[in-house]
Amino acid sequence: MEIYEVNHQELKAFITKCYENQLPLHMWGTIGIGKSESAKDVAMTLSDKFQRKFVEWNKISKEEKHEVANHPEKYFFFMDIRLSQLDPSDLRGIPALNGHDTVEWKIPFWQYVATLKEAKGIVFLDEMNLSPPSIQASGYQLVLDRAIGEITLADGVGVIAAGNRISDKANVYDMARPLQNRFNHVTLKIPNIESWTQWAINHNVDTRIITFLNARPHS
Image (tube, rainbow, N blue to C red; front, side, top):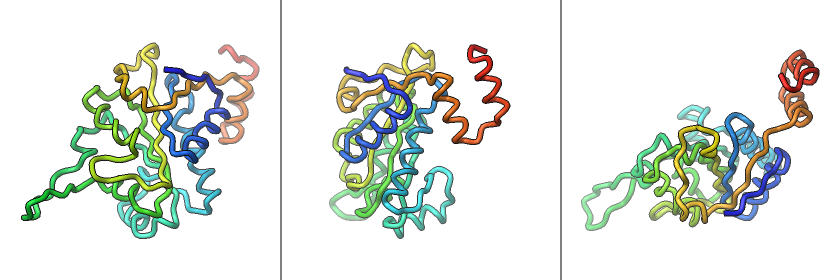
């Protein structure tokens, strides 16, 4: 498994390139250095590019989610899906017993929205290797084929994942080799004081904190 080490700007470029080419990307890195924040920043930038309204799926109301489903051409979504909180059946869905000789599957609402023809957005599988191997296995098809069972993600929907390394002591599991092979991999470097300062300024961090850490970078 070949892994490139990147800084935050390079990571955002990787995410953008993988989204544009429908390539799955897995980001590695220690805890709390901005992996998910970088993915969300790229989603916001892409929403501007496509002249769509950015929505953070996990933070909008039920009514707003149905609005996105009814008018997918207006929105660019960022869906934070935690596999560690799911069972395998949560991805596959449940069988709908409709009285016919065949079975149709009732899928989660977020999947339904991600399959709509005019949908655009990023499905972000955060803390992926925090889930046990049986749950990781349920994501194989989603990552490689952009599909789950009988449904396929829309062309405008990208799949990005992130996780900590075993060396980070975050109680993660080894990622199965078949799943590893489905991803492009990058490791996010711990930011130096210069890059952190730029991030802090852009995100309106208290200037006293910025000044203190620049005066004592090893504190």
